[in-house]
Length: 312
Image 1 (tube, one colour):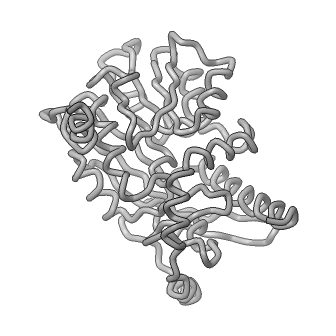
Image 2: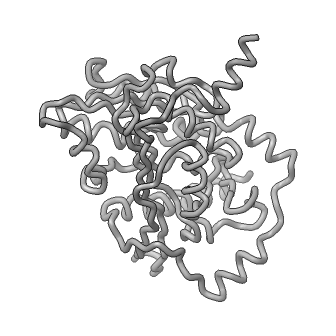
């Protein structure tokens, strides 16, 4: 890849993330139960992009997924994403799931990145304890080097949610709230259920998963070039990181098959204006809440099945 191509890609990717950051500053937007309507031009573009990345390349991407995210954080360190100060406004469960104000809330941030979500929460709430994990060892090291990181308030560790048991670092059934924010979209769709079953093991019965991620027909999905498609609503960026764009139906079915009950599951529509380029683009996110039933049993699912086979 030429230097000019790399520079252009990094500029394009930066613009996309800046648009995400702006949308996150005002995350409410317009909520709706129906998917965004596409223009004829957008429909034509999607219908013309049916060719998939070769099976060989897809296998290579899956094999190198950790490497690609580690390189992402090596390039961008802690400067790429903005801190998410909106989570307590959007998800009242981060405050309300207590019988009294000083009661400790135990949170798992699944896919913590460099801590853009957890450190605003730690600063704001003295009675929260956070388990934070990420696929990238480099991202976890950035979390541990943050001046706000203290072991009595936070425990950060590297974890592949699709195969590493969370119970090796988090006591089973001990977590009140799990945040899954712009994380599941980076996981291969065939392995998403594994991640959710893993999360369920450490979540208390009656505990909640707070979800926000890319929604179907988001602008980022429509701007992918040809030869980027891995499958239905699943794409690869030029740096090898991947992104899935969720429909509410797919997400609801995914969580239900992993043993959760849906509480809220809605699209959030926003328009983001790029004044420099004179563009107004449609952003689509999916914001949802899922409950682990009070009578749920831990220790079931594909990860425990795999573990039992490995132990024989």
